[in-house]
Amino acid sequence: MVNEKKFLVINGPNLNFLGKREPEIYGSSSLEEIQEYTEKKISSFCKYVNIEWFQSNLEGEIVERIQRASQESLNGLIINPAAYSHTSVAILDALKLIEYKVVEVHLSNTYNRESFRHTRLTAKSSDAIIEGFGKEVYFLGIISQLREEDF
Ligand code: DQA
Image (cartoon, rainbow, N blue to C red; front, side, top):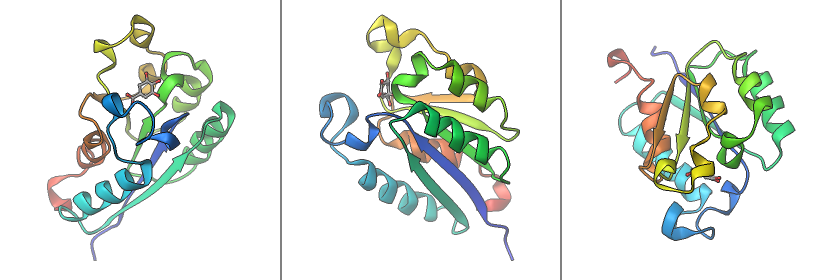
């Protein structure tokens, strides 16, 4: 019996409006479509991946979900803190509780954009950053945590 691999994906503010929100930057898929797409693509590589998706527009709710995640036995946390990436010491501090890998993802290449997006706070608590590949970043964040024996 192969061990199930469990991942938590956290999405921050305004990502519940993906598809409608600046599609020229973030693409035309809704968050729900991205979730379905990512799960389908991951399952074609590994059948034993379980992905929980969490989205909130509220900083405190994201902090509380990260705190709970620090008590859970997961194979990785993928987080797109969205605008909070550039401002949130609270999310930065909460992520320090996590003992497994944390991958920060961004749909857009934030370094191609306004200079205020170049300030990165939460990324200081992550093991890796993947950005600029649009909706593929969620797939890439998860697949990068799987090992040869998982395929
Ligand atoms: C984002 C980039 C952030 O600067 C922005 O505030 C977002 C989305 C991205 O996925 O490209 O909301 O995190």
